[in-house]
Image 1: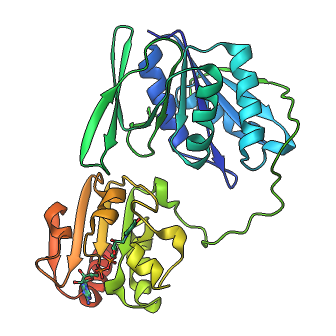
Image 2 (image 1 turned 90 degrees about the vertical axis):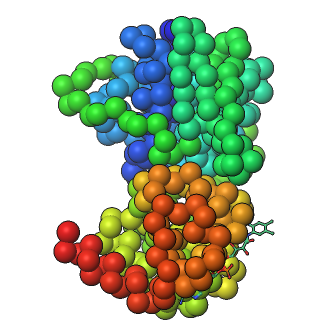
Length: 321
Ligand code: FAD
């Protein structure tokens, strides 16, 4: 068993991301009764420390600095490396999010360590931790470990079940003074392209529209269905290329990779590049007027018909639940 897991918690737009709890749960599996230390980087993030402890962290380290308010490679890499040097963890577990994907390989290189990225499952057998990750756009899975120390992995959101929150858990929170210098990039402004709501990469329900939705107005009923289900709206590249919605909603090989509990594909044909981003969803519902559409091959529930009739009906029915 590893002695100490350092897990990177993530705050985005003033909110602690759920994937932080999932990575803590992974850390608990890796260290057993040993120590899970959560690292929170940011400008003003101390308020989240208690929540991390309730979700299974034994200790929280706060690295607060004005240059950590928004993610930049240089600033986060420097802060994380300083904490690693002070703590000497033998397991490093990060979220497989934009910041985690960017910083983890750089830190692995610096430590001359292996790294298993995009993990969806892990098994611990004595001292060995075996990570499972999808390959070939989700068509197959491979199992990998990291020989030697530290064990280093990034975790795809929505796959490792978080531990149940326990408000009676207590733990120490300490602040670390990190030195950040020689930044090669500085964030001047953040311009949001989406109008808030549920974060697509962490949503447990996604209603995704394709070219079949036909227009930006055609997406409105999808937003209504997503609202009723407490979910987020996504899109195929067909829909985003046609400017029915923002590119930030695109799911697939060149878009976001998602693993919600429920994925409702509306007017999406099911091209291989789209499946690469959503085929590991736990339950897939497809709505398409073409009974031969390839999306039906991977759907758990297939609704053949006109999306403009079916989507409002679903919304009405779910409103009653
Ligand atoms: P279409 O294939 O045009 O499908 C529209 C569907 O809507 C059809 O099945 C039709 O039967 C149905 N439909 C039409 N009207 C109705 C109605 N009234 N009711 C019900 N159903 C209806 N695509 C992605 O999605 N994500 C990616 O990341 C991505 N990356 C790519 C990378 C590369 C290098 C390449 C080459 C392509 C990539 N693509 C990606 C594009 C991909 O190949 C497809 O072109 C795209 O996914 C098609 O989008 P679509 O299913 O919305 O459109």
